[in-house]
Image (tube, rainbow, N blue to C red; front, side, top):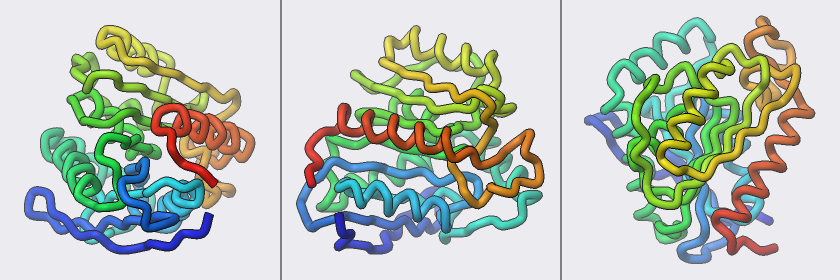
Length: 247
């Protein structure tokens, strides 16, 4: 589908200005919607390309800005401190994610009752924590999420009927077997419907083609086959959970 609508949407959280972006294939009112939470690099090239891809499938997409002022990072050494500052104040972290969803729901192209949150890396962890603490969405797709960022052992109190898809690399050091087991136990206790897709020989950030020549391939690297499988799984999940997209 051709993307007909692209506009910046400003909002605030904790006094910080956020600059999200809304994309839609048509002016159809209240369409099924993807709220996209960017990875640690911010709302830039890779995340915007993914937002365009979902909009091209016919979804309204609200791409959130978690860092504020649409800041992006190119220096990998700055990413850890930035994530640490946000995760160090969990209430403020979740407030930023909630503000993005509240702003998305206020847009005329968004169906407030048919939203799935899709997050990558840091964004995947953000989506899971938002859902765990009661975020009102139909579903969550967490793609190579940083499970090491989740509140360990925290109780899940999700909105009713939540569905979750997690796509992870089997050798991702930021989503270890122990961390995956903890996540599963929390979701099971809350009777969340979940699916976990694991890809062999795959580490962190496997969907990002900018990491084709990763300086640390044992930690994070693009894996095209796993990326393609994750895309297919995500598309199937969206069609199942928020149907209504045609063309």
